[in-house]
Length: 250
Image 1: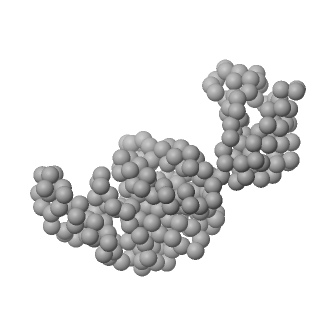
Image 2: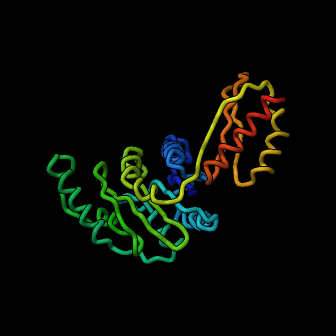
Image 3: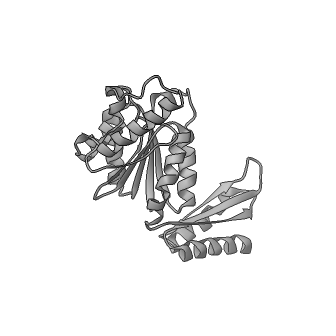
């Protein structure tokens, strides 16, 4: 399985907040056997977001995750951008509207909002691409959106990290039913990473379906982490073992 992560928000691009969602999602997806092929951060702009989604679809990934832009303000345009990218109509989703009514009733009873009434701004969060499913948001308000297309599954999460993480875990069972990638790793001691280039090239020729890379633990450190990624666990393990053996032999 493979994915793109698209984080959306002007506030990220101007450095006002950290891009926590990208870091957390990449780490969590990898733990589930999903290869993250690209992470992109874009502004709150319908044209830019929709083009980026189209680029991800053209990259033939299984999942496209977006975070941010699902709120009630005019600047929240992710849903409209998904519609533009997929050719779907923007509709008032009855399930999403029911979720939002329920959530505002809860917030009103807790004294966190002045009124439970669903005005136009709040109703905006219930609009989704035609054919999309929604996931109830117990932490915030805006539901997550899941749109299955013939080419990829688009999953739109809120931008608030606590909401994004919570809703992602609700979606995990859907991800686990897909084909996974295997990630294996080991450690080696080497003084000069450039000395590994020749052997890495050999391994990549011998195992074309495996991505194998080395990562220094820290500046001035001799120890390095070696990571092999493939759809076939046995191929990943074989490539890693061959690489380690050749390093130690040399």
